Length: 251
Picture: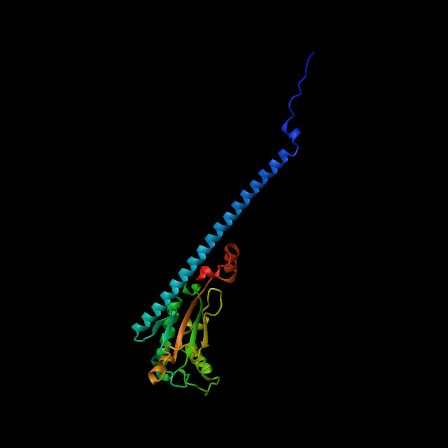
C-alpha cells in the first residue's frame, strides 16, 4: 500500500503573521536610520550656521578694535589725547579736551576746533572699508561728576550729562562738512548709526571725588561703539536644538 507523506507547510502558511511582523520591523529600522540621517544633517547645518555666526562676531569684534585704535592714533597724531577703555569699545574724551565747566554743557569756542577734528576723524575711520556693516550703534555718552546739580537744562545731572552729549552731536552736525556728515551714516540694518545718551554720575572714572581734579576726570564724553550680534531667532534655534545650558555648566 502506497503511503503519502504530507510535505511541511511553508513558513508563511504555518505563521501567517510572522513575515508581516518582520517587514514592519525592517521598515521601522529604515525609518529610524533615515530620521537619524536627517537629524544628523540638520545638526551639521546648524553647526555650520553657528560657526559662521561666531566667525562674523569675531570679525565684528576685530573691526571695532581696529576702529578704536585708529581713532586714538589719528587723534594722538593731531596732539589730541583720548583714552581707550572697556576692552577697546570706548573712546574716552576727557574734560580737558572739550572743557566742560562745572554745570555747563555747551562747547566753548576755544574747544570747537578740537571738537570738530574729533568728529572728522571718527567719520573718516568709521566709514573706511565698509566698517559700518559690522556696527550696531555708536553712542555719545555724557557724564558728570557726583556733585548735585539742579540748574539748567533741568533734570539735574541726568539732564546735564545728556545735554553735553547733545551739544557735541549738534556741533558736529553744524561744523563737519556735509560729505562727512555723521548723521547720514547707517548701520547694517539701515538705521541711524549714532545716538546720544546721558549717565549723570552713575559711571564714574574714579569713585573718590574730593578735589577738582577728581571732578574733572568724570566730566567727560565717552564714545561707545557697539557691534552687530546674532539676533534672538538665532539664539532660539541653537537653544531648541541643544537645550538651555544648566546652571552647573555656566559656573
